[in-house]
Length: 141
Image (cartoon, rainbow, N blue to C red; front, side, top):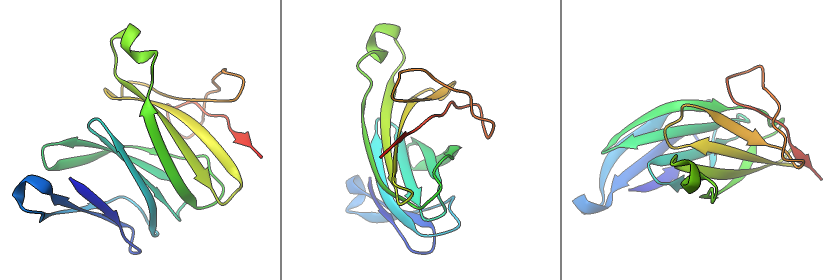
């Protein structure tokens, strides 16, 4: 798949194995999609609406399984890498880094199975968030 964020809040995607035929669009943001990242069967979209949508891909079907909140400004960049500790636990997990115009970088740990999502702070501790069942803290600076 090839993904592209749009100013209308949609994420468009094209299927590589079908000569880049337009596969559809993902509707989850209220404002422009400013950044995208993907890993495994997950796609992450960051938006001017200050949220990150977590999409789970099954074939061409995409489902928004979580909306990560915590930034006070537009989310301008996302990067993701495999959580090296997840192999030992047998659960595929990803470390997601998000940068925002609020001058913060947040570090999230997201499970491929999405049974639990945790965002870790600079001290390694996790703090519960009131907005969803994820955990939150941030690195600012």
